[in-house]
View 1 (cartoon, protein in one colour):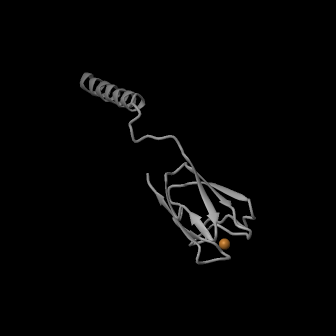
View 2 (view 1 turned 45 degrees about the vertical axis):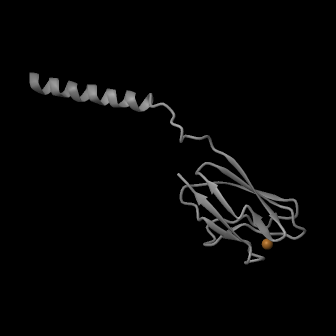
View 3 (view 1 turned 90 degrees about the vertical axis):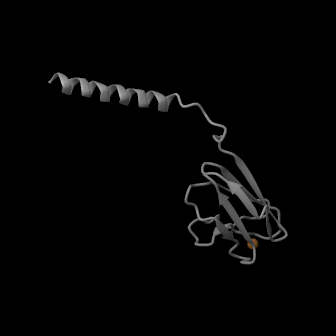
Amino acid sequence: MGILSSSLRTVAVIAVAVLISISIQPATATDTAPREHVVEIRNLEFTPKELSVAPGDTITWINYDFIPHTVTADDESWDSGLIKTEGKWQTVVTENMYETYFCRYHPNMKGKLKITQ
Ligand SMILES: [Cu+2]
C-alpha cells in the first residue's frame, strides 16, 4: 500500500514535471510566424516559379496579364478557378498540399511550392 502510493506519487510528479517543461519550452530560432507570399502572373509565367512556404503561410497569386488564368494543383486537389485581369486568389498552405500546379488554360504554365515544416 505504502509502496504503491509512493510510486503513484512519483508518476504524478514526473507527469507534472513533463507538463511544465513542455509549457515553458522557449521559442526556438526555427519558430516563425506565418508568412505572406505573392506570386505574380505575367506574360504567361508564374513568378517566382518555385516558392518555399510553410504550413500556415498565405500565398496570393495576382494576375497582371490581359487574359484570365487559373492556379490549379497538378492533381486538381486545389484550384483557384478563373482569375481575371488584376484579379487575385489566396490560399493558406497546408502540410500535405499538392506542391506542383499549372494553369488550366495554358498547361505550359507551371509553378511549384516547396513546403517545409
Ligand atoms: Cu493561363
